[in-house]
Every structure is written in C-alpha cells, then in structure tokens.
Length: 224
Ligand code: DC
Image (cartoon, rainbow, N blue to C red; front, side):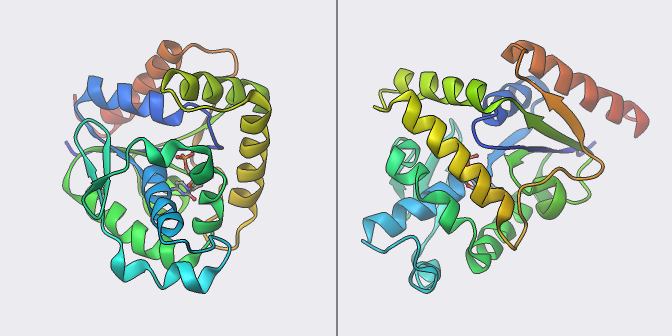
C-alpha cells in the first residue's frame, strides 16, 4: 500500500530528525523539502546574487538542478552541498528564497513527482496544505522557540557548524515570521493535521507517536 506522510511545522521543530527515523522504520522514502530551498539559496549566494532580489533569484531557475541522494546527500548541479546548506549564511537567507512563487512552483513540481513514485514521508512548511493536500497522514509538529533554538544549536555544534545560541534563536524567530507571513503557500497547519507539541517529548517518543498515527491510518485504509 502506498502511503504519504506530511510533516509540517516551524523552523527547528525536529521534523527532519523524526521523519528520517520514521522513514527508516517504515521503509518509506524521506524527502527533505527544506534542503531543496536551502540548496537554491546556496546557489544564489555562490553566484553573488542578492537573495532579497526576487527577479535576480528567479532568473537562476534554469541553471539549478537539485537532487536528493541516499544518505541525506544534497546535490546542487552535481556539487555535494550537504554541509554548506546548513551554514548560518544559508539559514539567514533561505526564507526570502522560499517566499518567491516561481521558485516554489519549480521545486514543488519536483517534490510531487518524487511523492508519486514511492511511499514517502516529506517534511516542510506547506506539505499538508499545498504540496500533498491528499496526504494520508498530516502532522503539524511544534515546540517552544527556546526548545527549538537549543535543539538546532546542539545539532550545529555536533556537525562542526560554528554558531551562538542567540544567533540561532534570532534566526528561528525571523524565519518563522517570514515563512508564516508570505503570500504563497505560507506555513500554517492543515485543517486535517494532527498537532504534536514536542517541547517535552524525547525524539523516540515523537517517533513512536507518529508511527502510531500512521499505523492507525493504514488500518483504516484496510492495510496491514
Ligand atoms: O526545514 P528547513 O529549516 O530546512 O527549511 C528551510 C527554509 O525553507 C524554511 O525557513 C522555510 C523554507 N521551506 C518552505 O518554505 N517550504 C518547505 N516545504 C520547506 C522549507
């Protein structure tokens, strides 16, 4: 049975950590849509294009070829940018890029193609509301800003990406604001999503909760 799971929510809510684990356990393909917006942002920065200049960024669309590879590897025009896309210069600009409708349409098209082929778990901001409105399971994962900033700070430090907690908290607040106030496909819960507040939950607890929701849905659909 082909299943699609959408996990949306604000920045650094732990969506990708949970989605990766659930994908592994259930044998689904994990699609990190944020990585695609990040890779596009990386390319703009490499080209020296101002990320707040919509026309200049949109003009780069024909030059950009983003691929997600096994092992959570992200390629942009065949360059491995897996690490670079997590750097603060990318995080600080990605919400501008993600607010441009033409760039969203370009990337959403690829996301839908990927979801059409396999059982997927896809995380982002607009998966349940726009990319996969008919997803079998929709989760809206949240946590307090403070919790999210600490989680992202720890993650960056463990990956050797230099940052301060203050810088991360400011970035998270700024991205949440831009992501939820943009005109096209903004961050918001789908009406049929399950709200999961993970502020006081461990990763395993969240993973188990998501799997329980998926299994219930599969049973309803008559699968096993
Ligand atoms: O999930 P993330 O932090 O890697 O996402 C990076 C940015 O990309 C995020 O601030 C908003 C944008 N994004 C989006 O607008 N829509 C998505 N489906 C995924 C990410």
